[in-house]
Length: 305
Image (tube, rainbow, N blue to C red):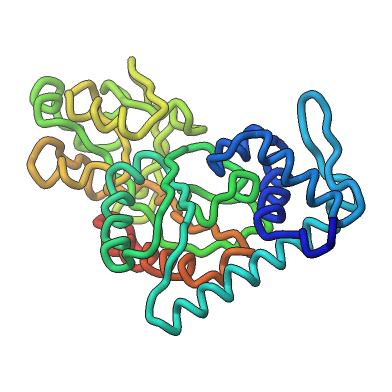
């Protein structure tokens, strides 16, 4: 086999297998049979004359030579993508696929409509939108950029702060009519709270008052949920009161299904960020979506710069 048989298709298969560590997962991702992916790897290894991957019964891993080859292959594929973007850009069109990951509740209530608007502006761009609250490995999962809530650990990814998500205390009118409206933070302890089971420290609320002092009050109740959409439904059903992101319930506040309580007291905000794969940050379509999302998200009620 000639060295010219190092094709882009085989390089792409190798890079994704190296990142995901699974032939079957890459086959599903690319819509090919596992035998095709296996053939691509075998043909590439024959072309370069060295083993790139070591295979076990449970996982595929790169050899030492494969790690060095992976770095070069990634750079080649990035340059090919950029060249295509630049060529299309000269004709006034940007095209290709973007893989976007987003926290689930924000994705359902906010990000999907932003993706629709983005695609209306750029009809040549396909978007693969994945909704998850898990902190996935962007490189391994083949994600170009991700929207994430909360503080983020240092990593090799490019982080772009988007804004601060304001949190408020809410309850349904029916709940307040039946149980009374708290007038000060200390009264929250006597109410049925709706807590987030996957948020550390949710059993205590820290509220900053008008004078700047912070009060920490115990917070409990009969219902704990691990998803923002479930909390939204619990608030609307009058099951209790509790903290939530304003963007999560903005429509329910507007039509009177929920009411803000203790509005003079502020909960700590939660940062929202865009994470971008450094290798993808220079791709025109990825930059376009990142810029569009950052600008539009700041227009959402409850997200402050």
